[in-house]
Length: 260
Image (cartoon, rainbow, N blue to C red; front, side, top):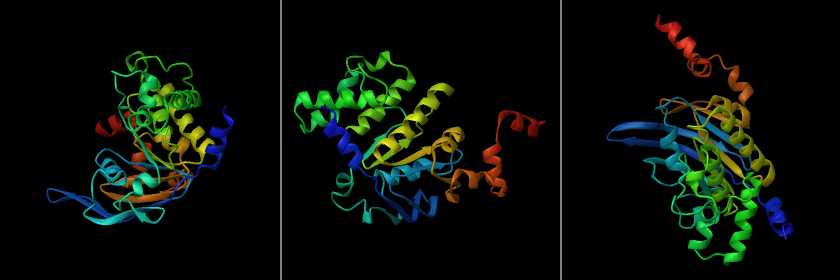
């Protein structure tokens, strides 16, 4: 029963993403200042930075919710605004809140896209849902209500829902926000596991330094609408730029000591 699905996952591959000269302004205030970056197929690429650095604005451009003022975003060399490109490359989004519907069961939430679009018969949807939940360590929870789940479990259900479409690109918006440290570690482990299991391209937008250094193949560090660094985590730690070091080493004791 599981062999065709496993074979499909092994054949699945991630896609490349290119951001070129991206600019975005609101009410005359420029938030993104001509960004350039490239995400390689199959890697975990983390975009991090302090609040107000432009991470969320960049994410909105990447998923096509907004159109940049200048520049372009390409998936496998094709502009995301071109008709059919987003569907062709099967992009999935894991929202910060999880965005689960409380009126539906866990299983119904995970299989919602397939059932709404009538892409599979009901028995096939149930099989796919069970498979994705098992991958995320949630076997047998199909009949539960989202309200019965912990915050970490809700995040994993949201990831399972994203996997249903067999995505080539998954975008994570602050996947560890509002989670306790242990649950945050579990989410990071799941992101790593999925990348190894499916070779999907993952773009993680987060201010969580532990998550970034724990999962990233490469990190882009943003500050005031610019990208200060792109590269492996170990290289980021060695950067002498005082702005980078201030962000990496910020903690409550340092902040309060500086205020005294």
